[in-house]
Length: 98
Image (cartoon, rainbow, N blue to C red; front, side):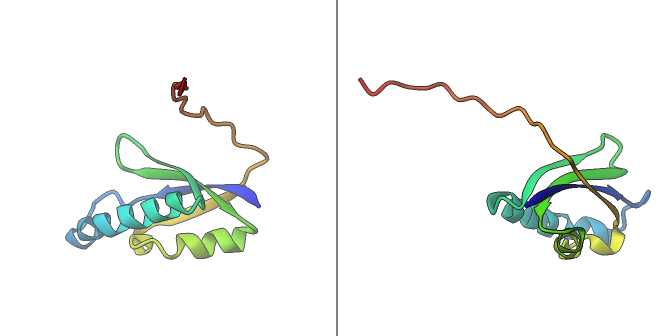
């Protein structure tokens, strides 16, 4: 399975309908992260762009997944297949049971 960067341009003005769908969008993102399909999700400081790294077999599969986003009608996604995606893993302390 490959990883893809999805860059999404968001609207300059957020309508009431857009804002009302944000909780459903957050829920969908959390589901995809729990399933291991989405590796990361980031929003720019000015709310104009989203970036996410998604696992999939093809660009078509990734686009199908992104098309399920509740906010898809307000998004203009661009998908790029990644050669690699290095991330810093959260390190938790190791406790001894002895």
